[in-house]
Length: 99
Image 1: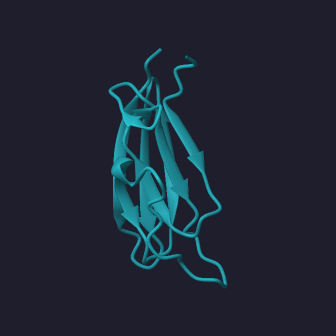
Image 2: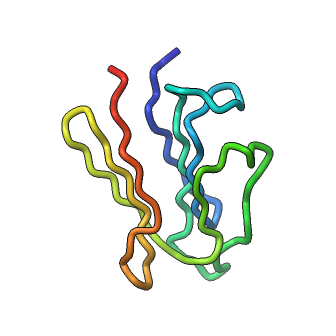
């Protein structure tokens, strides 16, 4: 209804990127959800999350700390999840605006 291309949130102590989805189903043109809470804390990185919508997880990291980087260029966004220890890119996706 609102043409949301990307939803980013935190709190859980791991990283997950969901497939484009709508109404708990994979959907072309659906919203991509990213949970990026693996920057590190005294509690450590949580084990595998994969909540009720585990079939929608495209990429997850439940072992390493890392951070996200969002680059916006016109009607295109590039999201990268970068591992803290090595600086290497663990996940990357290009998202084109639907507007």
